Amino acid sequence: MGSLSANVNLPFQPEEVDPEDDIYSNYESSALYRMLPANAKEYVAQSPHLLEYLQMFPVNLYGIPLFFSELKRDLKGMDNPNIIYPVNEFTFIHIFPDQDDVRNFYIPIEPSFMHSVAEAMPLIEKKLIDLIDVLEEDPITEEERKEVLRRVLKEVVYIKKPEESIASLTGETLEGGASVGIKDKLIKFLNTDFSAQKETAELAGANIAQTDEGKVILTMAEYRSIEYLLIRDKVEMGILNPFLADPYNEDITCDGVGPIFVEHKIFNGLKSAVEFRYSEEIDDFVIKMAERIKRPITFRSPIVDATLPDGSRINIVYGTEVSKHGSNFTIRKFAEEPSSILQLIEWKTTDYMVAGYLWICIEFGMSLFMSGETASGKTTSLNALTTFIAPESKIVTIEDTPELTVPHKNWTREVSKGKGKGEGEGGEITMFDLLRSALRQRPNYILVGEIRGSEGSVAFGAMQTGHPVMSTFHASSVEKLIQRLCSEPINIPLTHVDNLNLVIIQSAVRRPSGGTVRRMLSINELVGYDPETKGFSFVGIFVWNPITDEFDFPGRGSSYLLESKIATLLGVPDNKKSEMYFEVEKRAKILQRLHKAGYMGFWDLYHMITKVKKQGLLKIEF
Image (cartoon, rainbow, N blue to C red; front, side, top):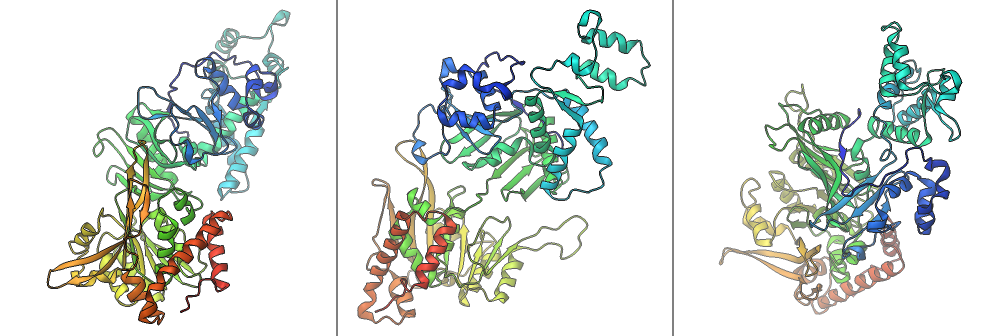
């Protein structure tokens, strides 16, 4: 990807650190190390550069940070957080308070943090290129490329032992045993042939020592730093690596010149110590990032929507013509394992009774829209509900950026495609095209990433022909959702809207504590169009109570879907239709037991629900 530039602007005055202090081989002798808690000592033993950072951090002024192996949601209300947690074996994150701003600091701690290897890097890169050029194999995968870089780096570097001196390794000494200094190297250089000693000039100017064999001499700390930077910048996503590796980040944003911001699952909005100081820096960065994801960006095509290698969604805007603060980018992080419905319950986004009700509705093929504003958690919640789709179902997902993860084996995943360069007619594949194609694939459920255009009419056509559809939608209330459905560009006739059975309104709401939480505000059943009033009737089955932060069930005893739709499908007699509410309670209790037994993960929960169904525990009998 090329070396990617950005600056680290620490929010504190660093302490002086002895550059000759070899932390890698002698960290246990440090007084600060002995003061650390047990878990922090384990981290330092694996990643000594963490101790280097702590030595630089003003511990006397701010105290030793708290160390967490994982972050729990009860840390949300923490005032003035001064904590460090790992995101992988190389990288840690320091959350540091800012007394003058609502946003605290987010400081990535990487192996390259303490060691300025900028002078040595060009020479090492030149030597690496010479070696890689003569390699017989052609690395294809990322792992192969990383392995090649590690191997050739060892060929061009000599790691200096603590007891060894540079002079003894370079073989250059003056009379009396004193080592040759930079001034002496320059005098020697000026008295030699310039063309033959061009490289020597570069070395003399940069004070980069080499052995007689031409290997660059580095300390272990410098070697680890360069190895990390090479892999980070040549194979991976450069300075974004710590941000992308952090499972607690939801959004990563750079608005132009200035810091990178993150939206954190625990500590909300944070500003990073990593910043861009010039427009040229961020322009260069986004160009290389776009090349890395094989979506080149130009002045003619300055906007890119794409997917990063880890599945995260990225939007890039290039140049000052369309973005006055300079190029910018926003990344919506992709979770490796989707959140489960039990995790949503634990976070109070919903509760057991709501989940039990939705379980029955989804299992029996009700169509559902998850609606709300941007960043309200619609996709997360919709994905969590997919575990309720009958395990034997065939599912087709249709998205413009792949985000949904379905646990079922019979899953067709389709993604729309823009017209590429040089492609003529028919190069573009829209969500409308994919949705129309999906109807020929005989799916039991169609999941659409988001309905916002002409694909909406096809989705409602699918519902009319008995294909249940689940999708996300941008609307903050049922009334606004119906208005949007019946207006340009979707244009659904008002009399067809009741093909949609359920609308869940979800929002990010601010609690009295000041924190922002996501809640399903209401679960609504669409009943039908009344030609007399020319209005559309719907019933709020569950409603979130902001005072108690719990869910009320005003629809108990009046559910159109449970009594008139699902009970009719099951052949339940009229006098027993009210017993459908006991089925909701039964499923709520099953989820409660699974939660208590520890089946919290998305995959674990799906497999347990499948077992529960196979054992006949979900059978509805009257």
